[in-house]
Length: 246
Length: 242
Image 1 (cartoon, chains in turn cyan, brown):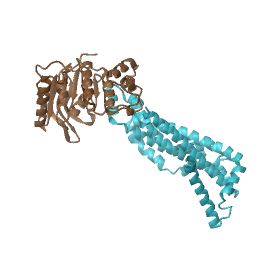
Image 2 (cartoon, rainbow over the protein chains, first blue to last red):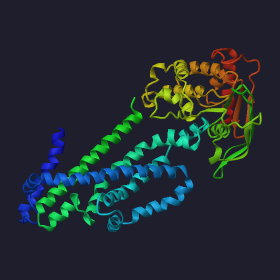
Image 3 (cartoon, rainbow over the protein chains, first blue to last red):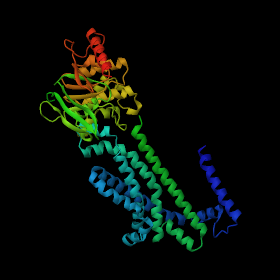
Image 4 (cartoon, rainbow over the protein chains, first blue to last red):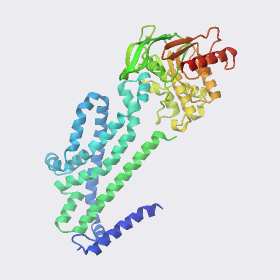
């Protein structure tokens, strides 16, 4: 049943792809067929794996750092209403800057290597994580906070024992988004300036008219992103179950 | 435990321009069980919140304090209308939550004994969402008793219980909270007649005391003549206030 549910859309997609090539009489150097791409995937698997390892590292480190930084920021904002009032607009502003525009600057600042890509991934997920966790932290049922205060807890203790565990599902929904965004950040970083990674490989293949290889790299990015999303989703489910399971 | 203080309230509570309570004056005697009844919306829960120090979203124009002139903070346990059980903690962890919040070692033996007394010994390791409404309320009662405070503020603490369990929990609360200052908001005249050493009715017109002179000590038998008579008088009084 699961195989059918996953396999059917996949088959449909491949059929549409091949159908478009036949119907529009696309030459292979503009749109290669699924078979050509599969061949390229197989022939270049070592190359793809090598570059994928770089991109995956960037994404995972960016995700971990972004989650940590978002968690810290949201916690600080939740502890201090004054900070929240003055820093929230700044946070929104950070999201209003197009990440593309920053990529060249980050390459300048953090260099040609992993640093600038991690920074891109981090920047792109920082806002959704912080925002989702902060919103959840401020939405604690007032009765729980009141109860804790009567029991003699101070603000920090209430944050740690009541508000933070209550907000974990919010953090998780932020991380779910982050899992999809982080690869975008890393790829943009690689486009702008890199010598390794799937984004770099895409540009390289494009420049050498190896369109089938480029498509293979895109496919690998997509599959990796889906896998990452799946993993974070599983983690989120586990956390949410722990919250309520008997 | 410090000797339980009496409670005194006088004044008026507003929120955003609308009056929630008063102007009114009331006292709860030290070490006694005071029941507070009255139509919905007259501010009974607001009164409890004032004594619990939860009035910062409200404007209290007056005083809500202990009669021994020391702050109430740290001497009060509140059992609110919603059970307030934290869904990610087990029932036992919920009962000992106060200890954890105060950075003390949870006394699991005592928590387990209290859970046994409210009939939840077998459910101590379950999470609250696996419990029925009545079981959740009993868990909240165990948590309130675990706090071991000189003043207990109870807001409809037995409302979700079936008749037999309710009578048992009334007996339990009366014995566990003996000698403490209890302010107990309830809608049930029979409950007030069983537990109230003093019974107050709060209406739009103010506070009125319903006499319980000569009534036996609490908890009173539900079928004793005096209990039934008080229940009747209270019901009549609440009918008139409606």
